[in-house]
Length: 217
Image (cartoon, rainbow, N blue to C red):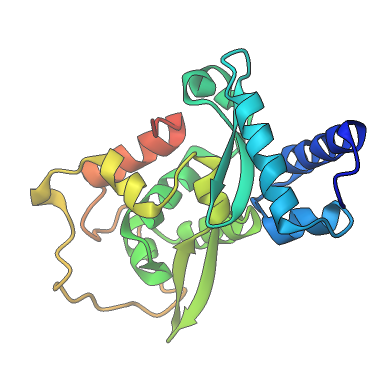
């Protein structure tokens, strides 16, 4: 939509802000242009910059984040702890969070390894996390290879899985040996809760605590 005047530009800015407020995932510049009836990408860039400047005012509790051509609104770090309990996904049971923590730290991780570490209940955890769009799965032989999603990163205020690992700060002696071979059990084989797969050591506890508290800043 061409900029034909201050009134129309203000309306476009409001529409762009509303779209970013309601979307559950980052929006590309092309997607925003389509929402604004085919506006040029240059015009979208101007609107995004104007919105960024407006939200940079300390009186605002949210900010605009743009990465790889995709934009989203997010809570400013000083306010995250005070309002995190109001965010979606706060009803995730702690056992499921602990499985999510292990997947995130070992990303990508096979379902077989997760079950070996967390027990047969992990099958249900994986299904719930897929339904919540926090992980995705792809077939790998007789098991599944689990990846965290952009929704996981967005929800926990992360830009990458590496940033998550950085905040975990696991002692080097407890990190997984990448050369260690593991025999994958057949899917559905009975495995007792707590069966060893590197153990639920500091790695497990730290990652689940970070996810549980959303302390990523």
